[in-house]
Image 1 (cartoon, one colour):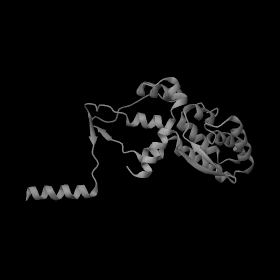
Image 2: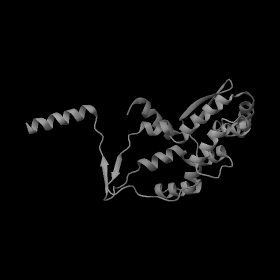
Image 3: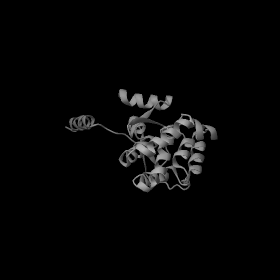
Image 4: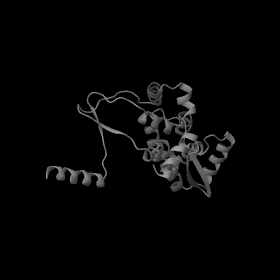
Length: 207
C-alpha cells in the first residue's frame, strides 16, 4: 500500500478525510458524511442514496434550482459544524458561487460519498461464481440500505445512522471476512512480470 493510500485509509478511520471545493472565493472542505448527514444533503429525496445523488447532480446544472443546490452543498461543507456555519455557507454559496463551481462540488461530493478514493486505495479480493450471478432484491431506499448494513455488519441503528461515515460502512461491508460459497472461486491477479516468469518456467519444465 502506497503512502497516499495508507493516508486515505487512516484519515477515513479517524474521520479526518476530506476533499476541497472552491465556491465563490472561498475554499470549503467536504468530509465523509454519515447517513444522517446524507439525509440533510439530499433533502426531500425519498429514494436510494445513489438515485438521490444522481438527481442532485442533474438539477445542479439548472439555474432555476440554485437555492436547492446551495442548500445541499451548504450541508455537505458543514458536516460536524454548527448550524450557524451552515446558514452562512448557504447565503454565501447562493450569492457568490458560479454554476460551474456548484456542479464541480457535486462531482467531488459524489466521489466522497461513494468512497471512490478509499476503494481505490484498498486491494479487494475478487471472486467469480461458477453458477452465474446471484439475484438480489430489496435495498431500494435508505431504509433498506440501513437494514442491510445493520444485518451484515452486526451494528446498531445509531452506529449505522449517525456514527460511522457512509463510505466506511460501504468499505466494511465490501471487505469483511466471509466464506466463499460452493460455487465460487477466488480470482488471483497476476502482474505482467509474474505472468512471463510463470510461462518461462512452464516452458522450461516441458522442454
